Length: 328
Ligand SMILES: [Zn+2]
Image (cartoon, rainbow, N blue to C red; front, side, top):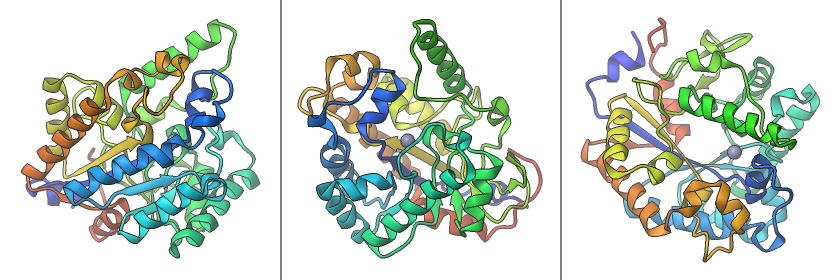
């Protein structure tokens, strides 16, 4: 019997996570060069407190995917994260430097990205991370092996979203046509056939079910068309579409809702440069509207009797149920 079968009639478990990509990541993705110094720490210092307020209003403990280097270079950001960990939020690993080509690096470098962040998070909150999310959602068999060897309980990188994959391919192609290089990479299309529900990956094939000890918690996509239901979509979509996407996500037993720190940026007040605002549609949406969209989505989840758990606790619950079969 599957977790899916057991839970299909129960209220969903909802895990809200935030990828705390530093702002320079967005400059890299769009091939805009380096980020200005004045906004270097804007995600942890200005966006994260807004997300923390949102979670506190809804009584949610979230999972915060931290880029390890930030913990060592930004004292104020580190204090904010330590306070949030003390308040019950989970700190998990989003690598040390957020290399988009992580899976193409040599094994010792991949291990170093994991281990340095592991140590930095343990130092900040006294509790080493048990969860991992890869930069740009790209994983490999080697990366999963390294996480298993270190006793990680879950990975939450699989993103089987068809429109996202196609859009990413198109944007990267356009950037190449202009003679520039995006910092991002396009991974294997095998991800598009990955299960939507939590699964144990197969040895050597991280997008297939198997018996690796780690649990893969895919980021939620809709059963139809595999549309992604993540913060960026929710804050941009018109209300009717946002509600439908959230309802589709909440129709599954587990809604793994991924946000990014930048989702609650206030482009003008936070000083984002026009070149980046031109490339990131969510930066052109007023903060109040983005907040309202996320508030309404969490309210919608609550109204269905959802249980909110950090990914660490959701993985614990899901692990208790034997996994088998090939159902999506
Ligand atoms: Zn990221």
